[in-house]
Image (cartoon, rainbow, N blue to C red; front, side, top):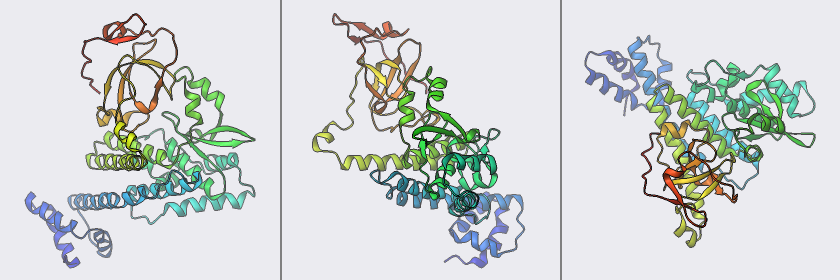
Length: 405
């Protein structure tokens, strides 16, 4: 068993001239596991930059191991049949794991305690639990705001950092709003708005939206539709969807992946990709358990084929399928850089978008059959298709180019 008394001697060897010795010493220090951090606190050592970097990387690896170990336990807790507020309570535990992983200091601040303190501070000042008042309290009085200067900092997905530093990204600020509201008995829902997560509340019997990144601004649905309707015809469907815990946690993971990729932090980006994929695999396994034998036979088969006209269920555009992949063939950079991350393990389609020169890559879950009889137009239509006597589009032999995602 590793003797803690060896730690000072081992640390001195971390800047040895021999790389073999340094690596061997680092492995011995890694063997202390999570106890290394506690043992280091007992020592009064002055580390030089080389020693400090080695120690910090060892501690970061311990955190990665811990998060990989705890993640399956959290996945087993999620039950899509439960009440939404119970669902959000379990979401909080995942976000607390992220905060513990992301915390860079030795601070013992706990997410639960910080959220409790905000809820208590609100109750001391106001008698009634009101979502609009809570938004003003958090984003005006407590001055939580959007981090426009360092938007892709991974710490913006750490709710402890967001609360203490008073800045974050749309989804992390919304999460604070939702979880404080949960403690006050206020139902605040998440809205998976493309590129800019929103909160949704009930105001005098009508649904309105709170833009937590913009100071808790209250926005009507019609105003959002006017702003984005020219881009996404199906935006009303998006605004009416409720983002459950799994949707929100997946989006946190996607944000962390993009942040770590931007920092060229391979170890952490690969860890977050693993957690994301484990989550999707868990969801897929749960779905398979409920399949009938007939469903299993059909599982993985594509519901559409080349030449079929379709509609995007979220964004409303029409298009024609030109090529089919059995599952997502895009690179990680493309997939996690997308506004949403539909399950990879389903058919994906290359679609020529009607009335444009645009080609999109779309998951089957986002498509429905287009019942419109309107003529389809696209600059590449005649290159890939001919029409039969019935007016159906017939795919020709021109090959689909290898896509550089």
